[in-house]
Image 1 (cartoon, rainbow, N blue to C red):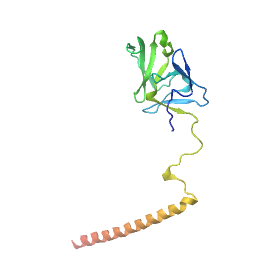
Image 2: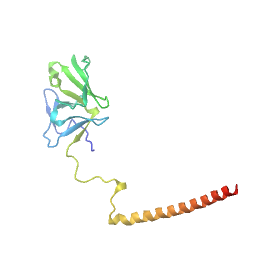
Image 3: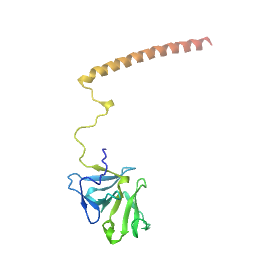
Image 4: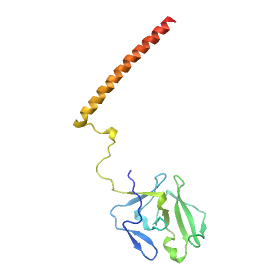
Length: 182
């Protein structure tokens, strides 16, 4: 599965009042995944915005793979009195972000939305794969150009195998002759 890094600075429009970013028009939906265990945690259909200063995206809905901690916390350092709960991945317990329950007026855009830290999520754009299939170099299909190379490698392998069989036969004869003498 090909992954795409969440980029808060491209294809977004700045909403000047709250410093949040709104996702631009996109034909292809994005699925957000836990960066540690790759469980889906949300998608762009629930997009509310993003805050590049905090490296957070905001979603109005998340999947059941996001656990909402029941313990409420008070943030007096950065958010000046915000009350929030922590969000974590139910698969690996990685801390994904916060949900703010109470905020001052200038942070109302964060209230009751899922604020996920970009550092702990990855994204996958649906339909971003092409029709060209990935072919492992070791499992390339045999075509006319590579048939000669394959036949040469098989001949070398057969020669080595025959030498090993001959050496094994000599060793077996010596072991048999030693066991017969005793």
